Image (tube, rainbow, N blue to C red; front, top):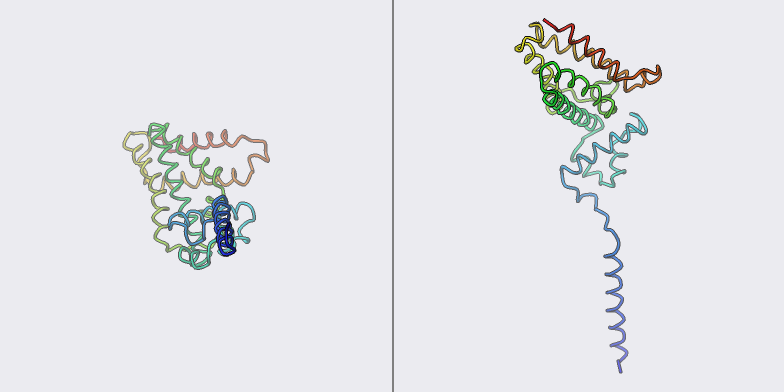
Length: 227
């Protein structure tokens, strides 16, 4: 027969086993500061874009983004000093994504004229698929750090991809030998107009197929650049 003290110990042991089983069954929440460095930065950028999409620019604050992810203020400010820094990072990410999409279009289309047309279509499709990245990258009213090295590098790489494609076509005799930088600005300004109209829903309101307009504009660009 168990003594009173033994009964107490047995009951305590049972309680401990019960609590251990109960706690193990619950999915553990990730403490805020246990994010890996890169994971947290990516998560903050994704949360910022979601906030812009759902609530607009005015609703975007560092505190709101951090609160959504459940991260501490100190962890948040280790990545972004203020709202401008966060938006600058969103723009930089957008430029990297756009440069990747343009390169995939150029190379996947076989380069040359076909690759150039695919590249132009990829540009507009990127804007439609990532409208808030695109708005932050090129829209007015967003507070960006224009001196940010990452933003400048990613922006130049994206524009450089367009210049690279034009120079390659010049060497193949497909494009007139004007200043490729000037040609790139002409192409960018024209396709950018299509992209902005597309993400603002203007073609939709007219009952116009955005893809038809895009192809028509690209064909006219090719004709204008022909030797």
